[in-house]
Length: 525
Image (cartoon, rainbow, N blue to C red; front, side, top):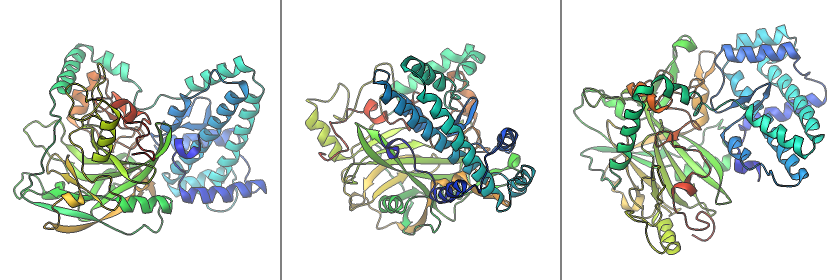
């Protein structure tokens, strides 16, 4: 399948720079890093904590990086196909992984102070010019040369040797932060494991799964300001699609709370502090903002676009005397999956930590499911709902009338305090006209991974994908389950749902958790 299906597009400014760099390389303007320079570069990145949790290196081949899309792509290795097809698959995987490596390095260099980059470029005699560009150019040549050598090696392998090479390559990929250390955590807290597992099972079977009403005494309607950032890192056509469907957010307000009212107002994220070790996030509630990006995934064999919107509150307040969810920064993610005609057919909702995953299908999709299946499954409200043995079943509170209307925005209702998505309505069904309108800014999600910090940039997220300084008590309480910092808000592509039972970004998530009708997001619905 095409790169658009399995991978996120590289940042547009980086693509432009890369094209210039590769052209310059052909003319000899950049020489590759030697062994010492390559080691020093990796050391510098590590010392500054500049790595990104979305990318995992391959042992002994640091110029290769694997992200979530490539992990899932690796599952399609055609073990029984002719040798030429297997070799082409491996070559394609290596090429993509080398591209991810350049993307990861470009981001890492943005998160290193300019003075350190200048010192590195001078020590390794990388020539005149802007240090970051010179380093990235030299790295690009080095990575390209390594890729050529690796693919030449692959070309000489017979079928059995190629299968062995592929197995060794997969084993050399560092574990994802989503699975790393899970067994060790369970062994370290072994006496408490049965109790936590029992609590999780109880939660699964007794949690309320029906629809909720947004009975807000007071609320404000936040509407998108239809402006495209001048230096957007998202392709213009994608940005226009994100802006077209940017939701209206109805936010509950409470007049008398024991915490500041600003904590119930989502806003623009910043990073404060003198050093990265002491950096802590901030949210400017006076500047409301949603952060957005587009995912492309193969669902039911079709390239499918998903629009993702993320909001952040300054803090989750303590709502009880002992509230394990209390902590800095709180937020929510909603994801709209489009059909081939760019109509939204389904909305997913999840806390930024991965908790409270819910699915809100359109009435259009539910009608197609009703036509495809003879009856609902036992104890299910919708034909779309699936039952999974010994696993969580997806929570489907309600089907949304008008969600698939490409001419109308959707309206999301968030409550105060808990900051949870209560319900979803089409604009025609929502009573927002009487509410005070407030404009919010739609911003590229990439900004969160490169926030201004002194004279360079730093990520909102640590190298483990967790929001800086946003620890919760539940992180420790749920350690016996094996979960890594449960309840801690985290970066895209590191969110897991239903107590780490599934990966939120798994391309097969909807096909596994729902009874989708055939070609659900194609031309027939």
